Length: 324
Ligand SMILES: NC(=O)c1ccc[n+]([C@@H]2O[C@H](COP(=O)([O-])OP(=O)(O)OC[C@H]3O[C@@H](n4cnc5c(N)ncnc54)[C@H](O)[C@@H]3O)[C@@H](O)[C@H]2O)c1
Image (cartoon, rainbow, N blue to C red):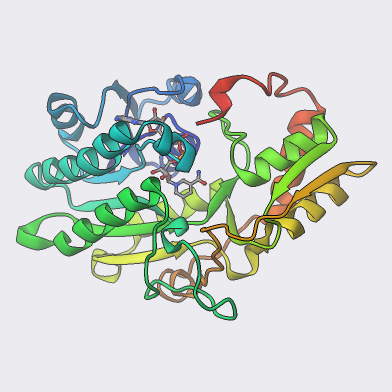
């Protein structure tokens, strides 16, 4: 399949692009390189890879990028609550207007499949802590980042397949972890592991709050699985992507990391009564409909990051390129 990956130079995008190429697909990446292009360096020697530097807000770039493509995996965004609250106008322009315009252009150019990267943080705070949130649970976004994701989800799902347009699938990813050529140390598992390895110290805000976690290779596998599943099974549908057994409270996560890192570490726990984001999610739909199963766990991800740090694969942890 010929696949356009927007945001393909990013933390997740560079792994999605690799996996698509490894499975014999043709990949074109459209990315404005907000955090540089290192994530793409390993892809250039592959014949089926092509990169276009451009912005999803620019009509000409988008139209050029879509030419001859069959599917779009839309990952490009200003990602995370802090990045979006620092630059709210830009967040709306890229995440909301840019995404909707990209979708319209995809429809005009006859794209068959459109996968939209969304997030479990759309659920905000669970009302009933004894239940797991499912795709049918109410979305209660509490940040601009999640608000833009929810608005785009709604519009895209409502347009899926209309007038012969693309079949849309929304993937609500759990919080990702693991190594990527465009590394992020502002994601919980990566950040806590790095802090405990390099400074032997970590500060945890609101240790009782739940989040689900997912290795980014499994996130990329989910994208591939959706692309290769018949459209009628996935069109107009949202899937939580992760594993029900990989929901953890932050305090528990830090304990897991400390025990794997070993030795004396200092954990500063800052009480936070009112975190607006507290969500424990069920991933049964993706398992039942797509047969999706994870291949990595948080423990394995911690190990992977520890090894890269202890062997000096990454050393410049304070570099701002690692944080959105
Ligand atoms: N990382 C996570 O934990 C996580 C969890 C859930 C969902 N997601 C979603 O997955 C996607 C990828 O996230 P990530 O962690 O790889 O983030 P990232 O910031 O590493 O990657 C985003 C990429 O998009 C590019 N980009 C930004 N604005 C652009 C624009 N206007 N035009 C073209 N390219 C642009 C950036 O240059 C970057 O390469 C996002 O849509 C995000 O919302 C991520």
